[in-house]
Length: 103
Image (cartoon, rainbow, N blue to C red; front, side):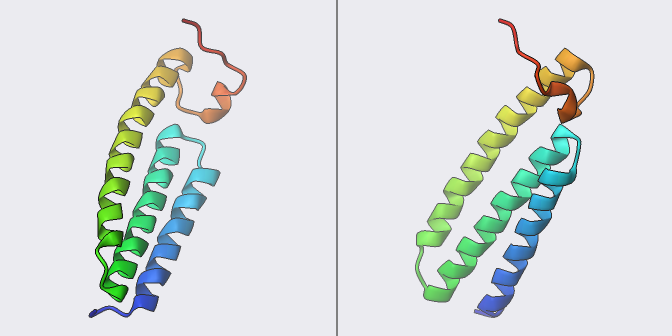
C-alpha cells in the first residue's frame, strides 16, 4: 500500500467529523443531507483502507453497498426536501418542527 494505513484512517476520521459538523450545525436541509453523504463516504474510505491493509476484498464489497445506500438516501432525501419546500416555502429544518403532513 502506497499510503500508510494511519493516514487513511486519519483522513476518514476528518471527513466523518466534517460531515457530522455539517449535519449538526447547518440550518438547511440540503446541507444536512450533504453532511450525511460526507459521513457515508468517510466510512467507505475507511473500509477501502482496511481492505487494502489486510488484503481482503470484504471491505471493497461493502463499499459498493454503501454507495448504493448513499444513492438511495440522496433520492429519497431530495424528494423530502422538495416536499418540505412546497409545504413551508423554505428549507429551514426549524420550520418543519411540529408540522404534520396531511394525506
